[in-house]
Length: 263
Image 1 (cartoon, rainbow, N blue to C red):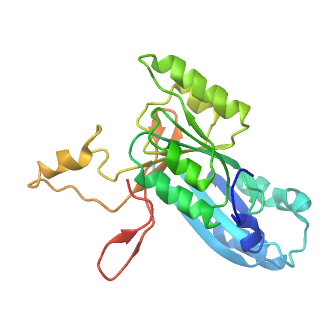
Image 2 (image 1 turned 180 degrees about the vertical axis):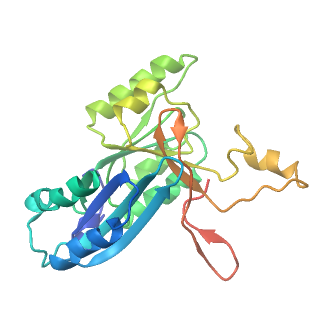
């Protein structure tokens, strides 16, 4: 882990948990069956989220449960869950909270998303091993030095394809498993996305798709008469041309200002 000072590892701060990532054709009994599996084997569910795509007829669920006291060791969990996966035709991925992915953050000039991520990582609040920050500008070099995170500048210099290739080579050499785009104002190539499938998270402002481009807030201020709703920052996984937008999670203080990553 690349860090300076007493940065705690996320896995040292909480009890280890297992995460089931499930997707399958929508049908009755999925939620009850998965919950029953965890309960009957001595697990305690600490987080559960689900979504149904009514157009595609697909069901998605994320279930996180504590491993302490569970009936199966982690290396046998996939085998134990296989009958349920076969019954519902599930695609199943299993993750563990103390297996921290090597993460890279890509940013351009705007610092606020990067600062938030660095602060949370330094405080041990992010379940990731932050390996590096890379940018097409030099602006964040001192900031990353303060947090003890290696910084790499890869300028575009008029050749986007060459810069994209250099970025991919850097991430590949550093064995990066998860890529965060913290206001990274470049368009990733199809080859870039294909090399990290379902492992690229984009943080962007919530004015999309109404206001595209580099100055969404300025554009929004010029159209006050139109109804454009904003609910804080958005994040989505980059999966090629198709993206699924989800509102960012926020807590609100008494002054009504949201806390959390905003763009």
